[in-house]
Length: 119
Image (cartoon, rainbow, N blue to C red):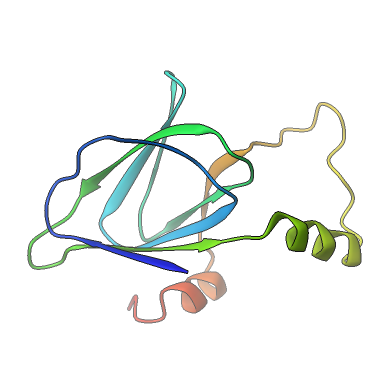
């Protein structure tokens, strides 16, 4: 698990995504995938990356009194695959709308686990 805190603007950072779950406690971040896809997330959303892809990311909202705070949980691909097999989760069907990196709404139980002091 990795924690990040920033009280100032960030430059665009070129990197490669890894298999990870990312959540933000304060502020917001934008992730660019290729030249056309921009994903922005904050306290109400999480980002899940499932494969290595070239990305550009930047913190887009922060405040000195309330700095940008985030966490990243790196996931082991072998372990994730094993859990999926044990759970009986079928592999995606051809043509299914599956994305390698995406942002989704945090539901209340997941929000309570990732950012317990959100309220």
